[in-house]
Image (cartoon, rainbow over all chains, first blue to last red; front, side, top):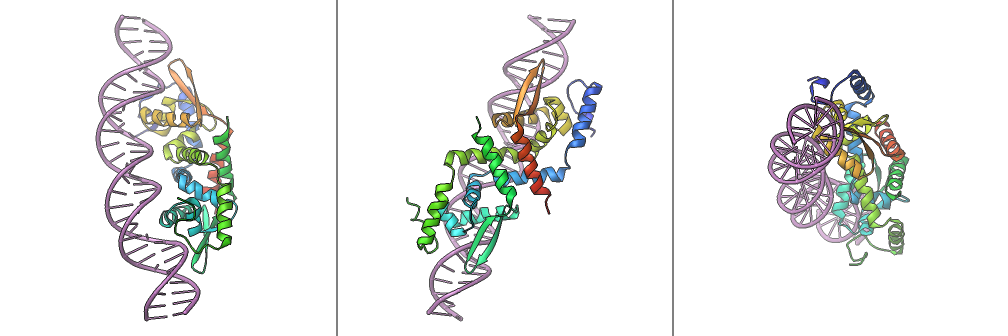
Amino acid sequence: MSIFDIEHCDVPEVHKDLLLKVQSRLPDEDALYDLAELFKVFGDSTRIRILFALFDQELCVCDLAAALNMTQSAISHQLRLLKQSRLVRSRRDGKQVFYALADDHVHSIIDQGMEHVLED
Amino acid sequence: MSIFDIEHCDVPEVHKDLLLKVQSRLPDEDALYDLAELFKVFGDSTRIRILFALFDQELCVCDLAAALNMTQSAISHQLRLLKQSRLVRSRRDGKQVFYALADDHVHSIIDQGMEHVLED
DNA sequence: CTTTCATTTGAACAATTGTTCATATGTTGA
DNA sequence: TCAACATATGAACAATTGTTCAAATGAAAG
């Protein structure tokens, strides 16, 4: 199925050219999918609270659970997602596992988002 | 229910102090909720593709639909979400409605996210 | 080895979400 | 006013997701 088979407004040359330009600038599907998946991870209150709790220092799982007033299981499930997306890293120290933000992108993405939310 | 009633690892003074510090630095629940809602909007392939399509210029709904090879209805539903979150703005010109990115935060949030996805 | 504590994991359930289809609204030109 | 086009909206359905509960793994201390 071609791009131009689908129903859309009258298609003078201008539109064709514009469509081709837009499509040529779109990142490939894999990158777009990964990017959406990344933001999906930020898009949950629990995970955002975890990331904020870890903003300035590392914390072990049970302290995270205590700080956020949630069960240790729920926190652990979310930490797994955060780690899979490389937003946090972990290190084991005896019985405890400490989590911390993975890198500065996490800080700056959250900062930018917060700016947007707080503006107006 | 107090913060310290829930089950967690042994609680020497260090932990109590840390928990209080972490909690005092957490933004209030409303801001956290709004932030998660914001990222939730970025967290969908279709909406990310729309945002990328609008990265450099405004487009009308049907050109967006054509460029992304989706139905006009699906695009329109997503545009409503994007507009509610103030990620895009719209202007009507005759029968057509043109959408564009709302401000530079959108550009920079996407840029940061893409950097994170592409790194390694 | 056994117990205890911290964390992880799997299954299940309720809740949320994206698309489709049908229909409504709004704008232009005849 | 009417027909044609562009967009928006509501209901419904399938699919995804976050939490809970129960049980498993892993580490340290006795």
